[in-house]
Amino acid sequence: MNWRTYADWAKRRPGALKIADWLGRGRGRFRFMDRLAPVPPAPLRPDLTEWHDQELAAAWIGHATVLLRVGGLNILTDPVFARRVGVGLGVMTGGPTRHYEPALKLRELPKLDLILISHAHFDHLDRPTLSRLPKDVPVVAPNHTCDLIQDLGFRAVVEIGWGESVKINGVKITGCEVKHWGARTFYDDYRGYCGYMIDAGNRRVLFGADTAFGRHFEGLGKVDLACLGIGAYNPYVAAHATPEQALRMADDVHADFILPMHHSTFKLSYEPMHEPIERMMTAVGRDEQRIVVKDVGGQWALA
Image (cartoon, rainbow, N blue to C red):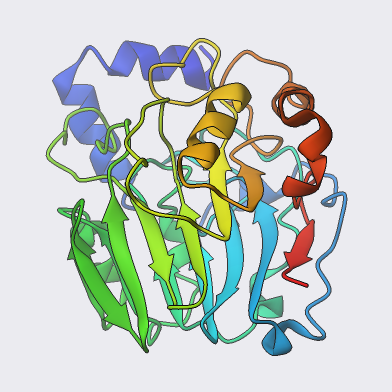
């Protein structure tokens, strides 16, 4: 029974889901088998030499993990640096393996000012990764998810919902509606989920997180950069947008630039690994300069 077959079986059994919730709270300290199989390095490696001089910059670490430089802050979204994601099974993780290593190691990150968590799914809220990040960094997360974060030692965890905002060092973070769900094991469906608008006054970034297609970003106003998921749509289009739909949602916020994410990292669905970015480039056509990053490890800064 592979991990996807087990997940489908477990979704129909509340007892199994309770066990999965317990297993999903591990910190990954003893999962040495995850590290045995070699994983190729990311195609590109970000160069952060001039990172702190940038007004607006982004580096795609992999999946939904994006390092942003906005309003003088270093912001890390949905940090997942583990080799596998899923429930802890003692010496290994029950879940998919990375297609590429993260483009940066944790020790290579700049000093972080903020961590954003969009929802509690294992490929977005990875406790083994969070357990290794500095605990003095504030964390913004959706409603009813702090129990998965605070016990790791973080001193400032703020929960927000759709339309709610918090200011961190002068940068306004607002929870945005998305079309997805927040349960970690399908049993805890009370958990929140959201995207984030990052507003530094003169620069605005939308981190769209996981979302199916909808017009829920309309009315948010213009953004400089939209980070939007474009993978895991076959057959899960009710939860994840296709590349063409992601482009439409970027147009809803009049995004000057787009960072496609949530593809080419974990095999979560049935489309070929590199199909999402190929479809995205076809959809954008002559406006290909709007797509600022195509490969894991790619980076961009506003000229």
